[in-house]
Amino acid sequence: MRDIIFISHATPEDNEFTIWLASRLELMGYKVWIDKNELLGGEVFWQDIENAITKNAVKFLLVYSKNICYPSDPKQIKGGIQKEIDYAAAVVQNNPQLKDFFTILRIDDSPYDLFPGSKDLNQIPFTNNWAEGLGLLSKKFIKDEVPQLKDIVSSNAAEWYLEHYLIKNPIIHRKELYYTNWWTVENMPSAFFILRFANEKQASTVHSNNPTVLLVRSANCLVSFTENLDFDHLSDRDTFSIEPTEIFEIKISDLINGYNSEHFPTHRDAENHFKKLFKRALHNYLKSKQLMWYELANNNLAYYHTNASLPSSKVGFTYPFSEKKKKKQLFGKYLTVGKWHYGLSVRVVLHPFIGFKIKTHIVFSENGSKAIEDKGLQHAYRRKKGKRMFNEEWRDLLIAFITSLKNPDGVIALPTNTESKLVMKEMVEMYWSEYGYLDPKDLERQSIFAVNDGEEDQDIE
View 1: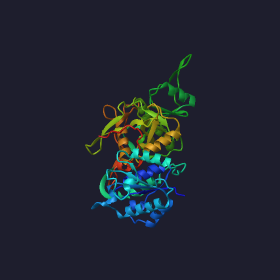
View 2: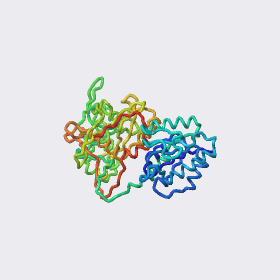
View 3: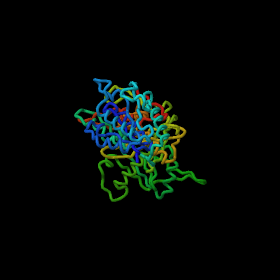
View 4: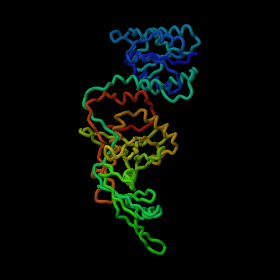
């Protein structure tokens, strides 16, 4: 059964279009054949190519551009392309039942008659817009009843491109700055307190009596950076004080260096209580800045901006160790769904330094505010948008997001109800390496996934 779409192209000049087209067709459910050895500049296996065209192909697509001819002789078709054209011509002659087997895809303004008979063949223009050309080609395939597969979830061509074709960008010896996902503390109180009460009800009551204090309740314990709480409780008849049975002051230095104790709070107890307190401090800060959050499958929260917290949607920043300035958009329109939002979730870490380990997310909302609750839809939209985002994009979004959290005085200070605030560094941890690599331009890699999906442009300055 003929069910393969064979794409013939002049290597290497038309590789970008060829891989883009192959990935698009595969995602539409068609079986596609491209010569991957030829894409890498390796040996061409003509027996495989001949069998694919003459025995298995239902359509032969010629990527038609000036590149199918020799640069020194614009009227002479390259040898390899001519062989594939000859194979296709033989199929047309021997299989008259195949409808429009040979199709030309014009991707530049080359003449219609680069080889004998070309102007008489079916030609589909991709010159103005690749997406428009793909739409015309798709309609043609449907009309000609070209076989399609079911349950297509990925593109072999795109995956192969990312895994093999980009090998041309090797690791090289050069000094390069790398950004981590560690966001650390610059200054903080020297100690925190664990206040233990007789029971959970007492702890809960005192917790409710101190709504403006950074406070975390865990069972019958309250954790805070201060021990000066309001312990007075007003009942229907009288006012009485609910005092803790024990107050433990734990120095941050002991928390980091470790200590031995067989009784509460053990070092593990101290770690767990501090992590909850530290995370709550960030949560309160982001809440005060009107950020929204979305509960992930692991019950962690992903925080993201909306128009309420960031009316312009764009944040300007300056690269570290450089005067280069840039702007990034942290949310915007997405298809007909609503909006996408760049977001962060965090996990508290104590070693090798105190801070947050960041994980990045893309969250989608219908109204620009509350996240879509259907996790399946969130996952599907995230894969679609995220697959076209690469190193530079993720890095810049992270820098822009942290920059957006600064107060008017340029610092990120989490309130602690003490004289000593919990101040975060204005940038993630970075390090210099003696090695780097030639990262392809993001737009080059995105081209194989490009679709006209109606997203707002992410302005870069």
